[in-house]
Image (cartoon, rainbow over all chains, first blue to last red; front, side):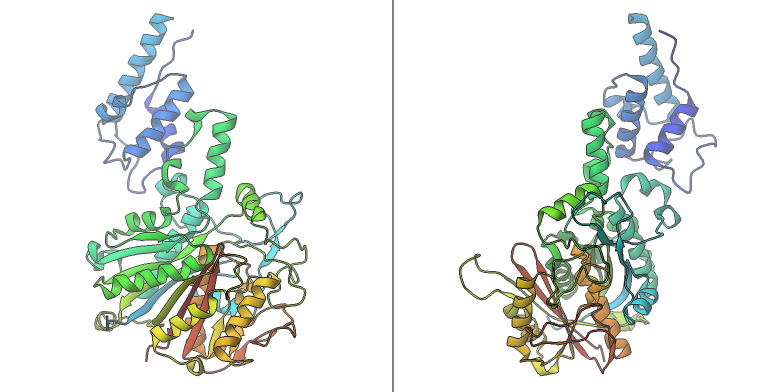
Length: 90
Length: 405
């Protein structure tokens, strides 16, 4: 299996597709350490985002991945840890 | 209970007009907006006509974040809410959030959104269903989204009683004004022109199967053969008259003066349907006599047995040919929860202009002793109007609107 990596660009694309973007927010700005709530995404938007990440990467993430990781950087790291773990076990 | 609930803002979106002035310019002259369904390929369905709102792009009017989470009916309702605020000269932040509420009616819910997500469920699997399916197809979603977008946290809810619901919601809004709320949004929006919504309506058994937009929906006509459905509706802002005038409200369209609602007796009972009583209750509530009423906006089901019941109810209250009757919904089709709020808007604008919009395409059957305004609009002083609406399953509601001065 080729190595899969989840990037900020992937996250931004999925956020745009699944939940749209707040007019007052520039996703192309420096957002890595900004709380999702400040970016205009409430829990349901993150649920939708999580569902899209899961089906695109063929993985299953626990709900607390999204409650515990409140910024893009931390969510991207968590998803990549998950992808790396799958690779080691396959 | 002495508080008078007045209408101070209107947002309307129908197949023949967006916004108060466009809508009225089309309605007052009888502009038809029924045509072949274009939102999906209806050619193999038994009913193929609808009143569609053409050229509406939600993204032109609403924040990007709202688009993936809203059905078309909600998008229309949110835009209408913005228009109603502007029309009323109120900014959402002007009034404390718990003093403003939203009471809408719904007949269909978000059929198109629901269909798309259910299609993903059966074709791709549960993980493909949008998280927003958790609310986007609910009956209450229009009230909820209007409330969230505009920070309205006062008394809110949804009424589900088919076409009658549009009046029941307005009555509930009036109750909240009487109980002290500053501003309540009321009305209804539906937009079920999608395959799933379509088959549900066909199953109701009352859709017209005609293909000619000018003869498919002919209430009170001997050729009546069912109704054409449409999409859209209206939202009204209700305020207590004194506080509305104190803030300098520019548009005081009229007073929601009376309301009555009844339920039909069991089918086959032989007892009289409930519409006459609903009308009489609304007149009594408003403190007006039948001879004070200048026009009746009919429910206009378009099914012969229902048309007969309505004509008999009107004749029982007003006498044969005792009051002008009209059904402008012949231009747009029946809009479900949106139909009666649109008729209330038409009634208020009839009061404003002194003009009764026509019932289009219809030649009144000699069977009905009602003074149906057909063909051309009729100029007449209008100070008091009665709006009738009936919902599938036996709901009857009536509202009296009056000039404010």
